[in-house]
Length: 154
Image (cartoon, rainbow, N blue to C red; front, top):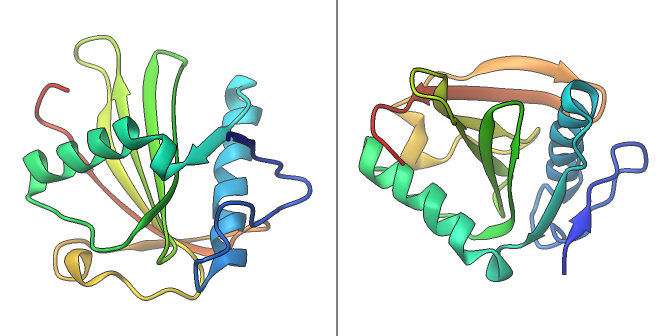
């Protein structure tokens, strides 16, 4: 069952099993607010078990681009097109959020972004390979993020 993410009344719906559920919910709400403010898009997620195609897509991009395998269990996922971008998000039990931004037009921006919820450790599979910058968010507290540019075609 899909869930429309409310960035005014933040909820842990679908994220309850995470040890940092409140922070992860804030991170998810922060993303929802961004897409709503910038593009008027309603950010809707669904349980990862019901969105296995989205999880598989993100998993494939990580594996083919950087030989990365995320150890954490995916909890929620979403995929949408807006502003010439095809976006996919997966929210993981550890508090990690991964997005794949893929410009529809050739030559556009294509990247994978990682965001770490407040209070979580950097996952072992990312720690030695990426540096994380910090940003503050009213909804999510301190968010640490990193990214890499996608070279292949997906």
